Image 1 (tube, rainbow, N blue to C red):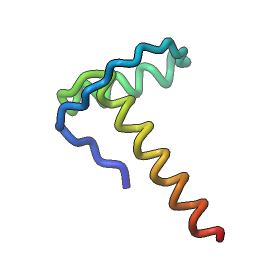
Image 2: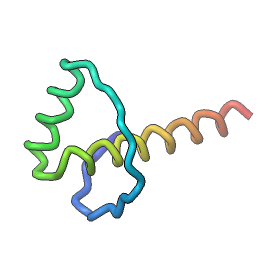
Image 3: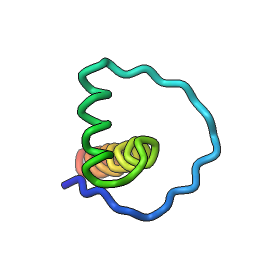
Length: 61
């Protein structure tokens, strides 16, 4: 289960990504409710997705 954590994540690689308006609004609301930056939330979502992806691929072997 995905849980937002408040630790500061150091990020220094700039990238441009595009969101649908609906997805952006949902993510932005989560960031506001959790009192973290939008960037921190996106980094955490990506980390979680990669952990689940790796776990899923390990389970298949």
